[in-house]
Length: 428
Ligand code: AMP
Ligand code: GLY
Image 1 (tube, helix red, strand yellow):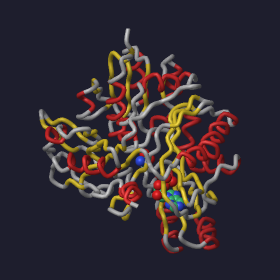
Image 2: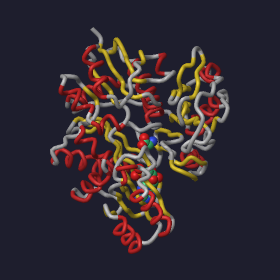
Image 3: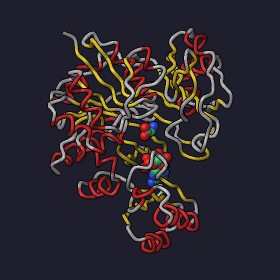
Image 4: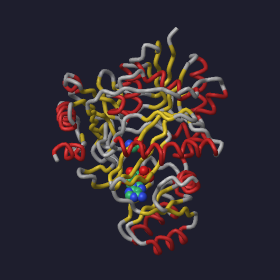
C-alpha cells in the first residue's frame, strides 16, 4: 500500500512540494489544504485553512494520512506538529518549542548569544524609550525588527536615527504588527551578499540542500520595500564549497546542538538567512520551514526522491542520507499582482499558461491562484513562480523570462533582473 500524504499550505512553495512529492513512487494519494489552482493538477485540494489546526488534525486522522508536510510558519508556531503527534500522526516540521527559532527573534538572538553563533550585534527591548536611547548610542544605519512573526515585513532597515525612532514608534507604540512588536530587536546593519542555506534536520543530523539566493526587495537592483521574495535561484555562487562548509561548522551544527541542549530538539527544515561579506558569515535569521520562493528552484533541480528524506527527518533517521542535484542552474521569477507588497487587486484572469508550459525545461509554479470555473484567476500578491533550468545562470534566466513573456494579466508585475548577481559573476 502506498502512502497518503497531506501538504499544509497553498503557495508557490507548496506547489513545488506537491510537484516533487507527487513524483515519488512511494506515494499513492496526495492531499493539500488549502492548495491552489496549480496544486489541483497534482493533489486533491481540501478547503481548510492552513491555520485551522483541529480541522486539519481531524482530516488527517479520518483519512489515515501517513505523512503531513507543513509549508508555512504560522501552523508550526501554533503547534501543529505537537497536536498531530498527540494523535499518533507523523509530521514533517518542528515542534512548537523548536519553531520558536523563527517565531521569536528574541529567542533566536538569545540562542545566538548564548552559543556564540555569529550574528549582528543586537539588543532586545520592550520599552520604546530604551530602544531609542540605544539607537542614539549606536547611530545609523541600524535595523529595527519585531520579535514576533510579521509575514516578512517586520525587519526595517533604517538609514537615519529619525527613521529608526519612527520605526520604533510604528512597531511598539502604534503596534503596526500587533503583539509581534511588543518586543523589538535593534541590531547592527550588516553589509554583504545574502544567501539562503536550507537543510533538513532530524534532531541531530543535518542534510544541507542546494544553496540558493532570494531577491527580497520589490524593485530591480534590490530597491524598494521588502517582500516575501520576488525570485530566487540555485545554486548560489556566493555560497562556495568552502563557505558552505563554514556555515555548517559555525552556524548549522552549533544551532542544532544548542536546540537539543535547550530541550527543543530540532526536526524539519532549518533555513539560515546568511549575510556573506568577504568570506565572513553572519546569520540574519532562522526560518523553521522551506523558503518561498527558494523551494521552487531548489526542488526543480533535486534528483532524489524527497519523500524518504522528509520521513527520515520526521523520524530521526537522517544519518548518512544523501541527495543528488541536477548540475544546471535553476531560476524562478515571481509574477506578482501590481501593488504588492502593498494593496492589490484579486480575481484577474490569467492567460498564456498553456504557451508558457511549452517552454522546454521550464515549469510554472502557482502561488496565489484559484479556479473560477475553467479560468485560472489571481488570488494573492505573489501569483506565479516561473522556474527554468539552464546550463548557466544566464541560460536559466533567458528561459525563465521566455516563459514569463507568454503569461499575461492586467497589472502583472515582475522584476526583470532575477539572478543578476550570478549572471554578473559568470561574465567576469
Ligand atoms: P529578516 O526578516 O531578519 O531576515 O530580515 C529581512 C531582510 O532585511 C533581510 O533579508 C535583509 O535583506 C534585511 N536585513 C535584516 N537584518 C539586517 C541587518 N542586520 N543588516 C542588513 N540588512 C538586514
Ligand atoms: N524567501 C524568504 C523566506 O521564505 O523567508
